[in-house]
Length: 246
Image (cartoon, rainbow, N blue to C red; front, side):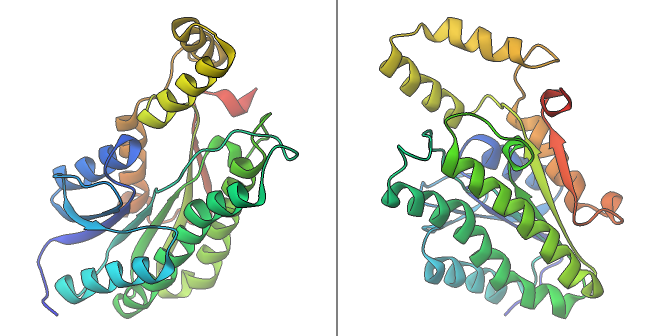
């Protein structure tokens, strides 16, 4: 184990979209950043990891601890989207959504808490969704997984406050990411809709009249992990252009 001078952040699912923007934000603020993802990236220190496999997640974080001797911030961002109501959700699809979205965060947090307890400090940011707060149609398993992440942030915050470890859930609304475009493309392929029109309709649903950008979520994630947010824990922080205020 070697001790380094920089602060250390671990980001799950950091190779694209919101995760990539978070990795870039922490690097820009002089963190040593590890990216746990299946898809390789040249940004940050990449460790290939299937977030649905607890053993892989535990091993990846063990490697970070052995290399650095510390973890100052854990950003649980990895997740998959699945669109279906409860009747149309198969057991296999349900299990896959929860394996990545929920078990992945559980595994990462569980393995990281030990070193944070030793440090008597640490910040955990779980990237949930506006669907951790509200319901949406055709989103049974995904919505349920995001509510689970909100619960994870709250209970972890309460259990580990005595160690000066903070945990919060960041709840983005509709953000223009590769995941968003994949979902829209899939919907258009099934419905025959025009993507440009659907995109405009999505923008019009937001009170601010536009979609959020990954960099905006990254700024908020960095704030929640910083000392500027030292009295914020156990909270659900929305960044949704006003959508959940309606």
